Amino acid sequence: MIRFFVTRPDPCRFLYLLLCLFMVGSGPMAAAADLPDLAPDPRIREAARSESLSFTELAELSLWVSGVAGADINSHLSRLEKLRSTLQARLAGEQDLYRKGKRLLTLLHRRTLSGYSENQSKMDVLLEDGVYNCVSSGVLYMVMASGLGLEVQGVIVPDHAFVSVMTAEGRVDVETTTEYGFDPGAVRNFNDTFMEMTGFRYLPPSDYEKREIIGKKQFVGLIYQNRIAMLQRKGDHRTAAALAVDHYILDPGSREDLAGLLLNYINVLAGTKRYTEALTIIEQAEKRFDLKDEMSDAASAIAVNAVLSHVEQGSFERARRLLEDSAHLVRDAKASELSKLLLQKELQIDEDKEVFSRFMEKVDAAVKSGRLTPEGAEDVYINLYLREMNRLVRQGKLAEPLFLLREANEDLQETQRFQQLLETARSNGVAHYHNTAVSLMEENRFQRALEVVEEGLVHIPDSDTLENDRRRLEESMGLR
Image (tube, rainbow, N blue to C red; front, side, top):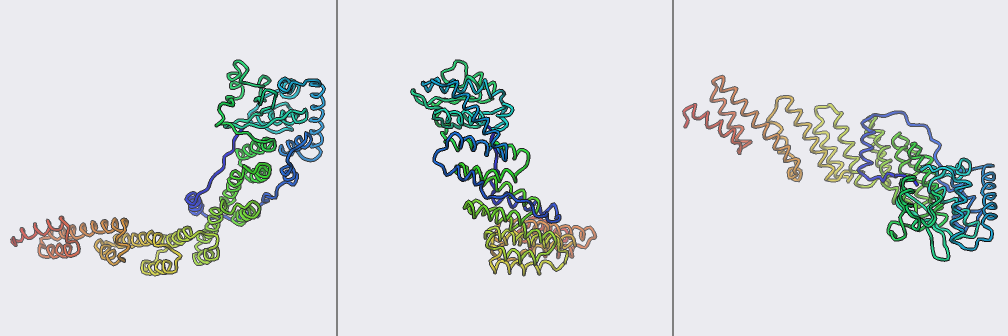
């Protein structure tokens, strides 16, 4: 049995995806896709309602789950009924359930099961080519056993599945992948030969913590699980999501897998900027399967992505309006994060030299309105001050960033990152006053150099560098 893997989204991962898409650039919105219908197959829904399934019902179910449709259903069903009739004739008169179950396995391998393949779980392929894996061979054994009066249930262990049959002595495991798999614990050297063929190791009943007993419908549902795994490997998340719906109807225990597979497909749609279609899947998932909690992160992320599509085009005001309109989808923390990103992106591309004062007003307004949390505002403020500092430095105004930072509000000044900016500005200021004084000294303009150093000490009184400069100048000028 092969496993499929689902992506469990979290806010950080979605935000990272959105930023990556944003940096790559925009493309035309994809045309409406042929979205999967999340309405369950009515045949599967009806089978799921049944308390127990007859031989014919179980056989039909195994074919539906395998993807068999149309006239092929009747053709393969006839094969299964013919096989049952043959087995009934061969096992007629066998009253001992242990021997009957064992002979059934032997006959299936000699008449139908001809070759093991790890990925082959479909019943139609098994019937046509004889190729099987643990799931398809287990389902075939289960179907035939139900038609021969044997009581069988499924067993799943990590990455593997088999069945067990009730006998007069109790339940007996049946590893259906091999002719010699009946009651494997009683067969000498079984484990070595079985592992060599399948790559799995038999887990006896004593390893009960690693074994899970499941019903017939759940066991047949493993065919869905393997088909989904193969589709995922091929990148067909759309079909995988559709199959996951029927798997969930047949096995409600697969709810988490359903949510994960739908989210995988939603990620694919979002990755190609098909936001409307992604939100359609989310809406269906919420309404049909009550997956609102599971979809909430995705719904918020897709709405954010749609807003960012306007940002890509430089339509910041439209982006802000859309964010306000989709506030019911975007969580508060994400809304603040998005407001922050909008401001930062606009700041990044705005070349206006007056941007500092203008953006200070925008950020203050966003905080006051509640669109931006104080934590989010801190990031924008820091970037805004950093940009202005860099602009002043490029103009050779090394001392002015220090004056700029000292005008910031007290709460911001207390943050660690602001203190780092302040330390950088302080170092630049020291360098500015020191280098200016050194240049003046080289021109023998000692009095002016002393004035520069003393001005620097007024603004940076704890600078050892400037204090040493003043001492040397005073000594050179005979003031000490």
